[in-house]
Amino acid sequence: TLLLLSFITSGCGDNQQAGTDADNPIVLKYAFFAPANTFPAQQMEKWKEEVENRTNNRVKVELFPGGTILTDKNMYDGVKNGVVEMGLSSTTYEPGRFPLLGISDLPSGYPNATVASKVVYDLIQEYPPEAFQDFKIITAFATEPNYLMTNFPVSTLQGLQGKRIRISSSVTPVLTQLGASPISMSMAEVPQSLQTGIVEGIVTSREVLKDLKLVENLSYGVDYPLSIVTFVAVMNKNVWDSLPSDIQQVIDELGQEMAIWTGEYKDSHVAESLDWSKNNHAFELIRLSQDEIEAWNQVLQPLQDEYVADLQSKGLPAEAYQERLYELISQYSQ
Ligand code: 3IO
Image (cartoon, rainbow, N blue to C red; front, side, top):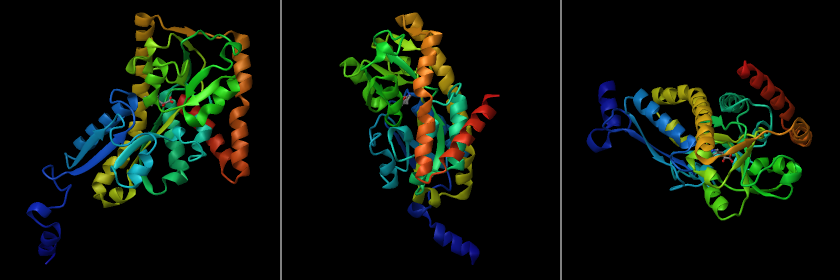
């Protein structure tokens, strides 16, 4: 009877359940807001390859980068509503929606993207964001600490006053503190905003000088590390619940692996982009004087503590989160 029952429930012919073999795979559509050659989209390619290989092609992943199905404005809601099964976006783009993640986005002394990605991945496991309650978190990672890059030389705070500089939304207080006029927008909108002069500079990670050819409009960088940008990839919860447990296990095993892979990919890509930009476009990385470094430190230093105090007063475990943040940075920087 058991055999007969399983024959009936698994059906036959057209009704065969997806995911039992490579001829009838489970299809996962996975969307992102920026172009395919950028580092978050390269992460998607790697994840696709690993999931398909490790499930013997019982899962087929279809990638939609470039904002073709969903953009940064509707990514997480689109996944929740089932427009696609999976989406990758930046929590840093949505101020207020991920309050604790806003702490680790502010300047914290991360040495690079690898450490930042490991730290952010762990923090998300230990403090699962409430806004992701109805999602399955697939992986998380972060940029290197971001740098100011401009079309005019900056060597003092004075030279930055009132300048129109793009930054991602949640970390705009960094630029306010430095005296610039922050303008927040998605990375997808940055190339045109630079070309048309809507902004005179940007704060982000430096691989985009090459990947998005931004070096054509940005001749200078300031060698002073600022905030990071956090990315979280999610799956629709009903889709996750419907997956066979061995496939769920493959995906879970990849969570931290992808955080590390992406951080390392990113760090090596930044180095390559900087070399290329210096050699082919005379891009100049400006080192601040010791006095200036101290001035920048002084205006930025209170930011995180003030934000933590505000969240703590609203009942969030912000102080514990901040303490764990520095523990993890020190652990992963060894
Ligand atoms: C990013 C987003 C999309 C594509 C490439 C990227 N490199 C760094 C980011 C993060 C970001 O949006 C930002 O504001 O630094």
